[in-house]
Amino acid sequence: MSPSTTTDRGAEILARTIMPNEGNLPVEAARSILHFRLAQADYERVNDLAVKARAGTLTAEERTELDEYERITCLVELMQSKARLSLKGEKQDGERLRRAA
Image (cartoon, rainbow, N blue to C red; front, side, top):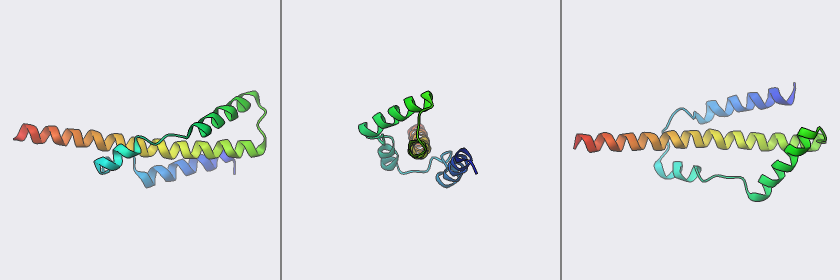
């Protein structure tokens, strides 16, 4: 099994678990999740690895490391998608309540 197959399968499992199309997070949780970012050192490391990947000079260990960063990024993106949808739903609910009042 190739690493990309594993990554794709992992992303599919995460999507089914997180359900990013369901905006059902509490507002405070959603706001917190939107602040998730890689630490500066990790961001710089990903950029270094990406340069090496484009040059075709990644070692097997570095490829594994870059794959891990990609998995983490996928997880954060799914969570933030759900968070944005949750906040959008909260905003729409608030507008409906104001119109009904």
